[in-house]
Image (spheres, helix red, strand yellow):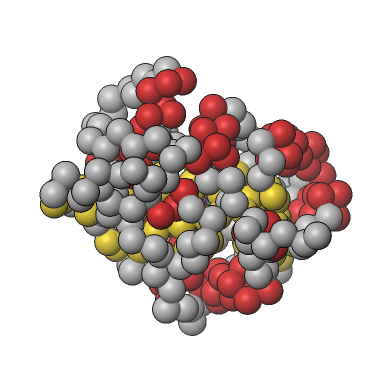
Length: 284
Ligand SMILES: Nc1ncnc2c1ncn2[C@@H]1O[C@H](COP(=O)(O)OP(=O)(O)OP(=O)(O)O)[C@@H](O)[C@H]1O
Ligand SMILES: [Mg+2]
């Protein structure tokens, strides 16, 4: 495995060492960290479906499942085959136009994975350096619940990442989601937007029921000074699709499919990368 240091991208690299392009500030790849303050709000579902929706817009999209404890991306994307190995590099499997890597390819789903800080740091580094990613348009990273070591490692490796915070509509959930934003600030990662999930459920009577309250997403977005990128309803098809590897974003003719398509459009077109990405451009 490649032992290249993330602080010295490509410099003095041995012949044949692949470029660790994500570590350079002039790559075109936009890295989106999908975060939340607590578990179970739909980070992995949002990561999977947003990735599929961005791929449907003709982008080259990659996903890193950084939840090495509770990996779920392979199942949600419906990937069954492991990565292949060519010249000591991992070739990520593809599903629905999205390439991905996950600890799920290297561990049994029912086996506990125990990570200490340095091991986790190394594993995340290897996901970036030992996988033949080339230069995708978007790299989405599904963070584990809460804050901590994973975000700190990734922020160090990928300082130009953009964070999207997923929250539920309860006003109370805001304070929790804000933790993700505080963490982002600590590690100097920019929060670019909020995505509200589980916003409403449409009953057989056609009525919208706001089961988890309302307004949490827009209130959090306002507090953080970033846009609310979209609201995703509770739909049984989303859960079913996550369980059987058929992400709902594949079919844009449905309400839920079109919602993910619109969030992908907003991320790609309205949320242009900021000038932070061009550190070499200094204004005197
Ligand atoms: N909008 C939705 N409609 C229906 N089910 C949903 C929706 N969003 C998420 N779910 C379901 O809720 C569960 C939790 O979602 P998910 O795994 O994406 O959350 P998470 O934030 O990644 O969780 P964790 O913190 O454990 O990683 C899953 O079973 C998922 O299918
Ligand atoms: Mg998850």
